[in-house]
Length: 211
Image (cartoon, rainbow, N blue to C red; front, side, top):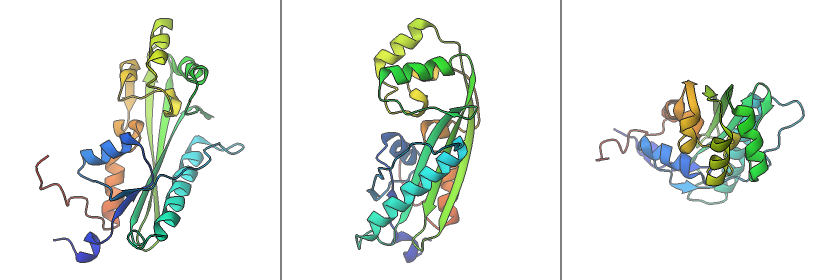
């Protein structure tokens, strides 16, 4: 049975990402409020992909936490944030908004392996900060000019880490994946669930309801 204390603490997602919302819904979790944190995602000098993901997830959680603290209804909430970074070696790929940027990403990813890092950060109602970094290895087929051009024309890449969405058309480019698929989409479900459960959030609260 859930304690009253557990039920009374809402969950805030420090993101407006439809992908992360959909992933949480997949495991029966519905955030009580979305408080997207707009932060500068520019890598610092010599910052590694792992360090960037960790820093941004924590920064987003802290920004959202401060916003939540200004509202009595969310002052004692759990705050969940995540950031996903795609890298080839130590080279961090952007989240392109321009076609030329996306094209450069595809050329770099074509026919080779890359890594996807997602850092999740949870701030508890008592202010405890918990983080977990998840790594997935992905290999793309060698892309033809036609494949690149048609994918760029789809616009699916816009704003996506590394310039692609594995849950969309780009899933056809993947020849090998080692690790968490949901991590590449943007939120590693097993690790997120474990983090929430470890801090007393009732993740199974809605599991008894029909899907």
